[in-house]
Every structure is written in structure tokens, then in C-alpha cells.
Image 1: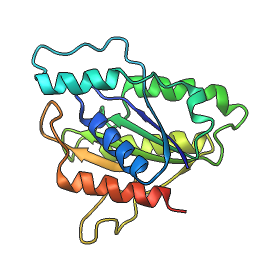
Image 2: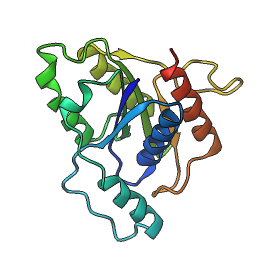
Image 3: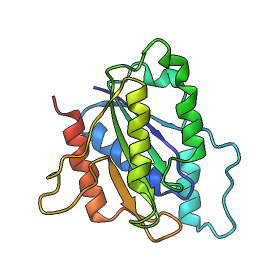
Image 4: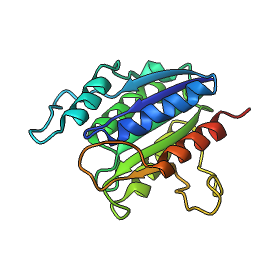
Length: 191
């Protein structure tokens, strides 16, 4: 299966999820293209810890996503931080740029999965994921929900993976998020 993972991250949280999703999909034997959206104004903040700077520097070495990158994908996975219940402006700019393929329905039938990072459970992460799903539907793509019983006995968001953190800068994924990513990758890529 050909998979494209497109990510935007400012503090590193969303990138950690993307990187974990990439590792899970490649471990399952799938070909993955890993891209970031353009963020020309990004600079590390003065309070950015060294480990977070290293993580963000790693992300900024990824090639910038282009609309054509999605053309050969069977599965597109999009990750964005949650900003006021929506995707980041940079992710929205990328999504809007793909309209060049909307006119000819070039993404029609491709499957799409979503993930986000959020500072709390009450800041609109579900809305962010719903906006990614809305984008998918307009492009003729098929949003793939997270199964209700992905982690038996635990609640998961049906619209995609939500990584909630109360830390400003990324450190490491918690065990529930890591396990959710691993199981969701298996679900997304099953035959």
C-alpha cells in the first residue's frame, strides 16, 4: 500500500504522532512518503528546550508537501495541531493548494485518516479532525474513522487520533497514544 503522511507541527507534538504513525506503517511493510507543510515563518521560540528544538529541526528537514504527492497514494494521513477548533493556517494553505486536483477528481476514492494534537480535551480537537474529514469529502476521498473498540474498554475519538498534552513542547508520546497509533495503523492498512 502506498501511504502519504502530511504533517504540520509547531511545538513538536503533532510531529511525534506523525513519526510514530510512519514507524507503525513501515513496520507493517507499507511504502510511506513523509512530508511536512510549508511554514516559512517558523522559528524556534526563546523558551524552546533543546530536545524539542532537535525534534523540530528533524521535522524541518522533511521535504515540503506538494499536491502531486497525494496522487499515487492509496491512503493519505493528515496531521495538524488544533487551533481554535480547526487545522493550522499552514495546513489549510496546503489543503487549499490541492484544489488544483479537485476539478478533475484526482483524489477521488483515496482513503484518508487524520490526527491532531491539542493542549486540552476541551479545545476543539474533534472539530479539527472533522474539518480534515470535511476536506476529504470535498475532494472525493473516503474518511476512515477510528473503530469504537480499537482499545477495548477505553474511549477513543472516532474522527482520528487526538494527542492531548499539557506541555508546551513535545517530549514523548504517552502509552495510550502510542498504542492507539499502532492499532489504528494496523486497521488502516489491513487488506
